[in-house]
Length: 263
Length: 251
Image (cartoon, rainbow over all chains, first blue to last red; front, side, top):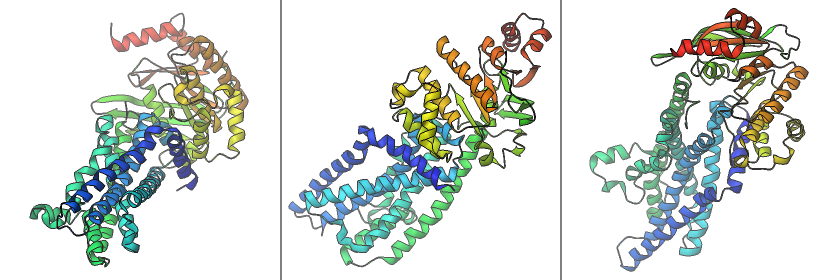
């Protein structure tokens, strides 16, 4: 594993973001709009007197954390798309870059995206709605780390599908994460799901994270079991999905897809 | 006259190499060597297996059977050591459009762990007469400038073996001439081994020390251009190409 090659790939993306207005919009514009819309919804809910204690905390906290997951996933999947669109995959994989280094670079890219988007949303939420997500204290850190892990898992899964099926699957880079949204119980407690979906949701790490977040906001205590479940599931899924990526990469090399992806 | 440096031992050894995709054999049991300082031309009609062969040599496609050794090492087990000394350029690749020429070269230099990056970039930009475009966005390059960029990225890493897949395709004669002259000069001075594909027969005769003719994935002729022309009783390499290509495609 070469740090130099990982940094090389990161520098390629930094050059890109430095001068791409469209890509900067992706980081700042959409999260800002999300926050504005959900912020007004929570204000409305409070005004009509709905008996939802701490609506602002529930919804805005959930929204910020959901964006952590979304951007962590996108950091990986969109980075692959950038190479595909630029017909640069051959340059990368005929160089010394290994699959492992490629994955680490895109994971680092996703952390950078999460930091930018998360930081911005925290500031917006504080300025416009006087909502301070840091009120969750140190509990916030393990939640965020787990969401980043979940984002990596979905991102690597998405990338392997795009690599295998080519450009026709590129919409998954934006859509895949929403497949997990209903069972991640981002904006509602897990009990509202039908029993069958509840069983599935308990196997999804983000469901534990969002349940945990709500527990912190209502009880003020760190839900250790939820965190342990989320961490355990995330670690297990991450190992499986990285192995799956290596396997898909090998299939693509065998079938000549790596040199044709994007055509 | 072909550019011939001191041709001694083989730096690339390909043995019984085949690639079968579902229901289709792209490369069929080919064996060849590239010697140190040699330019080997890989000739054949579209679909003959030239590009697939180069992709296998770069480790981008896994061979179905056969072995590839470079510098005495097996590509399957010594990928990093081998690729450190190998590079490629092709009409069919590009580089990130939103980066400038210099930024793209910097990224490649970092990927190969090169030292004194700025010095190397200055050097290659000068050699390939790219000073006026070094700060230009890649998306604004003409096809000739893009060819020079992909060649620059290949040569900047100072490879011992270079794979060039139709490096002059769809370029105007003036640029083709400049690229050929540069390559011959560079190959002579560095003792570089080159595998070269092109559809331009005159260029092939001019550039190659030896030629391999591929047809339906098999090697059907091998030797110097005059040897191949004589063997097929034709006037030039273009006639040989047409004869073999028509055999492949049918009347």
